[in-house]
Image (cartoon, rainbow, N blue to C red; front, side, top):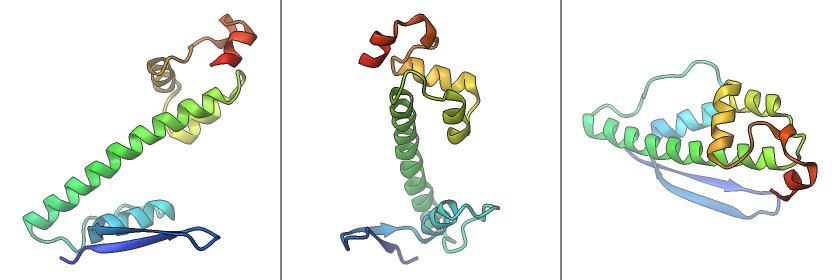
Length: 123
């Protein structure tokens, strides 16, 4: 199995190059970004070693994206004392109860009405 590379560029022509991406993870990533319905099983990895490498790389990406999503959720909640938590939960594809647990884990108040407005703006 040959690993792939990807180039991610911006409008100014600056590029970031990523090497050693397993082909099946690359396909799954492209499908996810394009919001393709229906997840396909690995097609390029056939041996145990190749499948284990794909699983390991996929697990690292998932862990990193989960942590990133948490930080983005907290940042969205901090944008305003009136940030729309329902919209945040919908965007994060999680039920409100899980959103509130995540926010509490990061020191955000469950009940923003109990806080004085000037104190809420500090955080």
